[in-house]
Amino acid sequence: MAKKLLLEIVTPDRKVLSQEVEYVGAPGALGEFGVLPSHIPFLSALGIGNLYFKDSGKAHYVFVAGGFCEVSGDKVTVLAEVAETAAEIDIERARRAQERAQARLAQQQEKINYARAQASLRKALARISCTEAAHRAGTC
Image 1: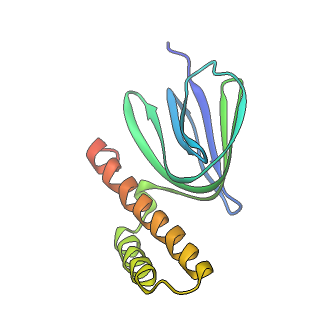
Image 2 (image 1 turned 135 degrees about the vertical axis):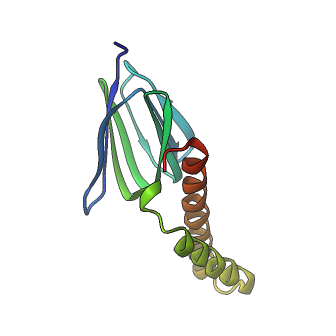
Image 3 (image 1 turned 180 degrees about the vertical axis):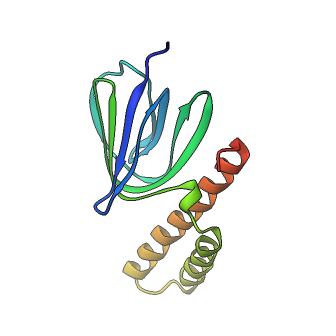
């Protein structure tokens, strides 16, 4: 039997996932990274994007925004500000959020509002991308 990793994803509100997996790919603050069993220990800040993991050769997707990822032994712990599995994402809500953010960006008001709109847009696009990737993989 192939060696696996224990992937745990938690937010301040709940445990999103606790599962043995073959591989984890995550959106680090400085770029994406991947983790296989027996990976060297490390800690990374998370950006906004799609974490994915492989189980039985199939890819599964989880939207994450902010937080940290710790790799220790054969365990990957994700402490995320926001995390939603692809099945939990309301695609219509994400599309409406995308439209609102694009409208705010078009107005180009104060810098702080512009930064918030950019972050909202990135989150909406990542949620949409997460569900689309899960549908392509047949795991949603």
